[in-house]
Amino acid sequence: MESSDSKATSPTLLAGIGTGNANAWEKLVACYKPTIMGWCRGKGLDEASSLDVVQETFLSVSKSLSRFQSTPGSGAFRAWLWRITQYRILDQRRQRDRQPQGIGGSSFAGRLALLADAHSKCQSSGIALKLPFEKALEKVSQSYEPRTWQAFLRTVVDGRPTEEVAAEFNMSSVGVRQLRSRILRRLRVELEGRSS
Image 1 (cartoon, rainbow, N blue to C red):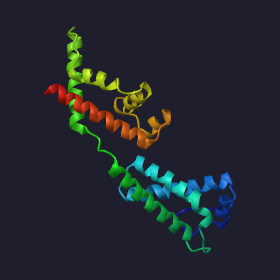
Image 2: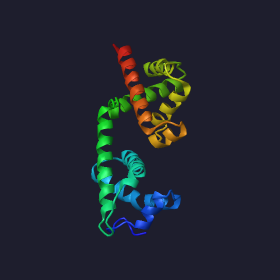
Image 3: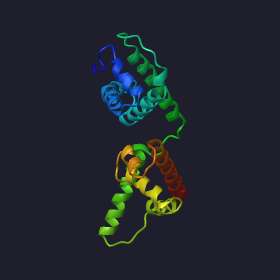
Image 4: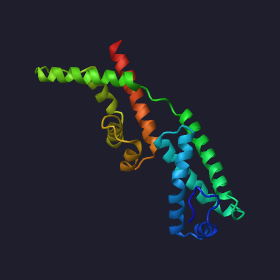
């Protein structure tokens, strides 16, 4: 197997994939995944989005490889893969643009940290106090199934990567990001309602 940096992809490898050879498919993925990741990073995608594009690109390749026509030694497969990747990058950006923006950011996180610090000081002084944030959290949590709420806590409180949480809870990465954004938005609305 030639490296993905060379011009041509082995025709026998592509033929093996066409016949359903799992070993050939693994070789192709191992060879081209770093290249696709590089293309994604070159377009400004983060790690998670790049991995999503890699997956979608290989899914597209698997569906349409039978229609691919190559001239030996021309680099046609790599060029074809590059075009598919560019379309998947555009899809990723469109999908991101359609998703509601996460509410919070560093200022919201800072407010949460201050609330947690105040709560800690109250507890160490023996003062039993339910802060507005705790009340908001309790109220919002009741609107979600325990599994959904746990997935939210794993991403926001534990700071675990989206892909890891998605795998743990058998959800898509997009679903986890949407869930996180939706719950943070509801928390913010709840907190703003309590402060007015």
